[in-house]
Length: 415
Ligand SMILES: Cc1ncc(COP(=O)(O)O)c(C=O)c1O
Image (cartoon, rainbow, N blue to C red; front, side, top):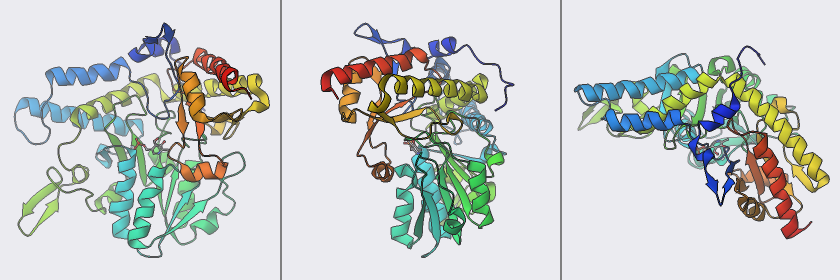
């Protein structure tokens, strides 16, 4: 990884997140659930607040200055998001509700038009439901065939039979980073493999974009989905980046205002991309926040963010293993070069929900559950795990708090 980017002062970065200054019962808040959703810095809160106070207006519909300014803010946000992922053109970025909607757009708009019974879509055992169910819906409707890339013992993609799986495939849709195991997949290699077989490469980058430098062009991807709320922005908005010719060849997903050029009683023509996919009044304030989040991350530098999280992930893996040895099982690769800061674990046979509750008594927020990845849970042989997930505002004191708080679970439940 390049070392060119200067590292920010992470203590100062943490201070930019007001909720992290909060104490409950006199104890600090330890937020370790950013894989679920991230906290928001002043830069995002203030951008949205400022827009609401002094700039809010409809976009694209009105000729007055306030509306023109609001439209500029909305399109400016699109340009910021495009720069964050190095999209060649801002108008290749479609604003959606979230990554889930982005992936549904690909499966159910592009897929419904271009895939027929028997066409093959290849997925992996790492996938979140958001990159499984839309394809299963298409399977029910169009009769497509789904194939699955298996995993190695340490939770990486087992690519041994990839060429066989991709043989005759039309789509390869896969996560860039797993929300359960933290596994970072070799995205460029997978895109190249998809293309060798004439398949499109669809990347679920929902966990990847918030934590890593992202370059959709260097990946050679065709569609890339991600959400604002996991990358310091507000909920209610996400993005789908797609190559212009593919977006042009995709029919609209939802119909209504904003997505049309002409409507007559006997039919309609669509607006150009991206408006074609942004039917109705969009989340305007949220777009401003999404753009501010993209700028915020670019100012910090994604190389520095990734490096910070690698340090912290290594520290967390070592600290948990040192303290609890065989009593803890942390799923996923141990090599932090191919792992993000997501730590799904089983601990002393204690139910993950109990762990989460005990940790909550010490203000340590972790998620317990199936993480919207039930096929992967089945593969791991569990119904649920506890999951601590790290972000740029976390530091070693958070990890120490997690490690110490787990003692509370052993006190209550024993081993
Ligand atoms: C890997 C992955 N893909 C997709 C999603 C869906 O994201 P959203 O709920 O923002 O649509 C998530 C959310 O947890 C995720 O972790």
